[in-house]
Structures are given as structure tokens and as C-alpha cells.
Image (cartoon, rainbow, N blue to C red; front, side, top):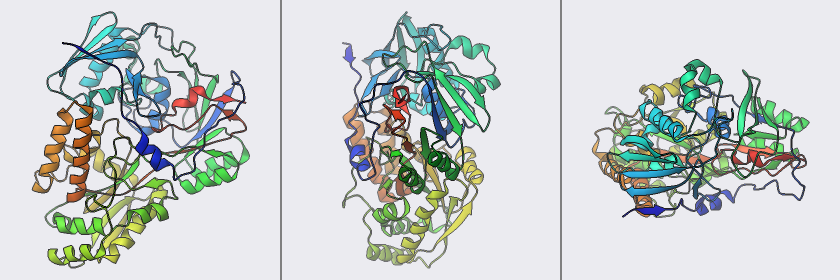
Length: 522
């Protein structure tokens, strides 16, 4: 028997509770939206590798713009609930088969109709690509249109992450088959054609990128402004200067101290979502002290994570497990969380039992990218020293660190890499626990056996409640074995805006800028 499933999801209460400790505000007012005008937004980067190509570009810098241009079959609202988007609903036919009903009357920004053929082509292209997002559609065998409004997805094995993947605004974009096939790879990186509220108008390298209102947008809530001009300003101080001069309506920062200076200039600070997780990956090589779980556990027990948040994140941070603290799927952290309550006596006892002699343990950190993260590693070093652990900080160019997770290059002892929000709870663990991934340095080691078992169960489970239980257990297992060290999670972006000039805008929990279509100029 077929079961009709209305789009639902998980509550965001955990995120809201964490965000309450940071300054919170929205652009609430009684002014009537004024149609038109250009919204000026100062941002840190233009699209990165892959430009705006919906398949090739998988970086956050590109996703900021793609999320305004492209859409997926489903989406999420502020509370974490899965909602309709290009699909009005879906049906789980059986554990291997899903039918999606495609919304009628949707047009691309050039006025051409969205058809089921575009949906089929988009997902077949994703499935044939080398994109890391394919992990979310693992086992996808066929995508086919069963009639003019229905697309059927058939899997070879149960896939618990599929629906969450389709509900991520920056995951599986649906695009025009005619445009994609007629446009070269080079040109697809510099152009775009989607169904979202805005369309690409102009892109001047290193200067600005402008999006115009999509006149063919299908949504009931049409964009209010005529255009958004993103001013590309990599330097945080330079962006702050634009704010202080009143030259921009909205700006985005990563450094909490700079954002607070913008607040001092009269700008409103939006809600912060702690989804940028600082992950310290460990290399348990035979010649490294970290091969011994007791030394890894002592390192974790030496940390006072609350103090790291207080001293090193400017208050825009939270204690986090491997699922980022700002994610609705993040488990609670309390005194019973393995290896998370600072205990120097226990740490020293573990070190003595392991015969640790003070050998330096290197921690390579990015020295020229997100430099506001550096205090986190400095505090970590000091706290580890309290237990007698010699952490040696190694300033490393981001270009060198990026080769580690991109090409699988090796590193010594520990390396710090920040990870952002993942559309599916299981996705946080893929790089760590799937043996052919770049960061799976516990490949074949018994310390990770139980974690790998739990991960396999999680990725094949389709019941949401059962998946949450498995995810929680997996988080605690990773913490118990210290397969990765998480000193803190931070705000991925801290948005500020001029409340006297902009109405209708507020930050969203996923940093998708989903409310830009609602913003208006007073």
C-alpha cells in the first residue's frame, strides 16, 4: 500500500536555544514595503572554484549566489521543517522508491517552462558527476518521468539521507536541460539560469556581482527590490568602513569583533547560527602519540570548551560535537557527554598510563584564512599544556591545508579545517568514516570500528526518529574515541544591516540569505 507523506522535518529548538546567547534582532517595523530599488550588500567573496555552475561549484562562496538563482525540489523553513519548493509533495512508494509531484506553472528566468524532463536531467547529471554531494543520493539507480507532473526516483538500497538532500537550498539544484546542454562548461561558470527569485545580471571580477529580480518567479512572495548589488570586499576592515560610511545596506562578517563595531555604528546584528564547526582532524600514524587512544582522550579532557567559546569566539560560538551545534540534529551536551567535561586529573592519569613523555604534537592551522579563528587554537594550546600535553602550533597557508581535504595529502598529527552545515546528519561523518575519503585517517583501525558500524546503519535507516538516535550514538562514539577534536562551533556569517534603510530582512539559520527576496528599501 502506498503511503502519502506530507513534507515534514525536525524542530529547530536546539539551535534557537544556542543562538539566544548572542545579540539577536530582526528588521521588524511598520513601514510598508517600497517596491523597487537596488539593495547594496557588502560580502567577502565572489563565486569560487566552478563559478556559478550548478554542478561544479560546491563551495560556500558560490552557494551564497546560487541559492538566490537556483532551487531544489524541497526546502526548509526557519524552524527546520521540510517544505515544498519545485515539488508540491512526494510519496514514498516503498523503501526504494519515491515519487515527486512537480509544481505546475514554474518558469526559468528566461521565461521557458520547467518540465519533468529538466528534473530528470538535473538529477541524472548530479548522479553522473564527481560531486561530493552524490553521497546524499547513494544507490540512486534511475530517475524517470512517469507522467507530465511526476518524477520517480528508484534506489538499489535504502537511503536515509535522500530527502534531507533534496531539502537543502544549496545541494541539488534543478536547472534547464536546454541551457545546460547548449552552454560550454566555461560559460556555465560565468552564467546561470534557474527558477529562483533572482537572476544573474552582471559579474565584474573582484568588484561586484548583481542579481536582478526574476520577473518570471513562481512564488507567492515576489522579490521586492529590483536588484541586489553584492560588493565584493574580501577585507573585513574595508567592509566595516563601508558600513561606518553608510555606503551599504547589509554586510556580512566572520569576525564577531568587527560585527560588533558595525553594531556600534548603528547597524542591527542578525541572529547567529553556530554551524561553522572548527574540526581538528587527527592522524593516528604509528609514529605519532595520537595513535594511542589514551593520549587522544587526555587531549580532549584537557579542554575547557566553554572557556574557548567565551575567550576565543567573541561570544558568537557554542560547544559542539561532530554534528554542528547550530544544526537541529545536534545532540545535547552535558556532564555525561564522553570526554567533554574538563578533568585535568583524569587527563594526567591517562598520559601517565600511556607513557607520554612530552613529545610535541603538531597542530597545523590556517594562518591566512579566517584569521579570527586563530585564538581558538591558541587557547587550546594553553589548556592542553595545563595537562602536560605539548601542542606545537604550525601556521600553514590555507592553500596547503586545502590540498589535504581536496587531494588527500598527508599531514603530521593534527590539522584544523572548518566544516559548515550539512543538509543531512550523516553527511558530517562521511569524510571521517568512509574509507576512501581524504580525511578517513582511521581507515582500518579498530578504534573506529563501532563508529563505522553506526554510520552504515545511519545511512541506510529511513525512519527520522531512528536516524536521530543513531546519530546521537555516533556523535558520542566519535567523542569517546576522539576520532576528531571539536574545540568549538562558530557563526558562519554574522550579518548586519541598516535598520533605518532596510525593512523585511532577517538572517536565517542556514546562511542561505533566504529573506533577501523579502527585503525592501524604506
